Length: 223
Image (cartoon, rainbow, N blue to C red; front, side, top):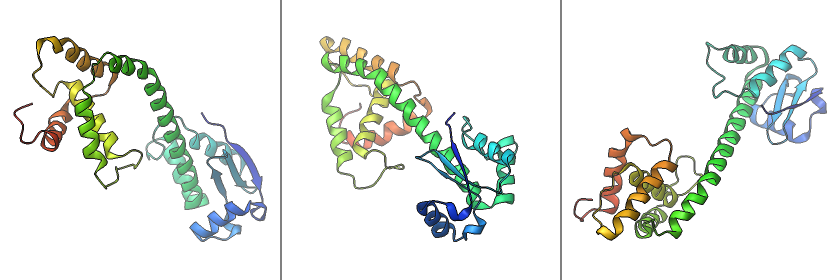
């Protein structure tokens, strides 16, 4: 659980950047200010008129370790409804935004830890010649030439395409013929990818396979 520093203030004591955010985005006067959470600073500014029990509950919900806080059937969802009705949408939004921000930081940390744990295995595969660099390069080139943005715009299509290529290889969807002397490396490559990718959705494989097959292997014999 992330810690939040609470600063109880009169509305006119708010920092200028917070005043600008509240008045500029929500078009409300300072007298209507109740709560605002500065995400990167980990500070929650609260109007001195807000009861202590509500502040404690706001912190509990904003730092809730679970993924969802808006379900009407849960305690957190019911409290968020109370926040909306009692303190208005800006207070509701800032609590939700902080929780969403915290979830994203946790996702990034988990991804960072997973990547670091598999890098040594990937490097061993590279140095052992188990990676088909030609296919990876071709996937990278096609993605590099695309001008669109990905859904979250965190990485380009060149990265997404090469990653999907790994999914296809790991699932065994790519069936290429190799000479006997290559078979051991190919098998090790497929199984190595499978072990590293824990959440392959097999139901998605045919759709992804046909999509990439159309992009990369059109005109070739069956792969």
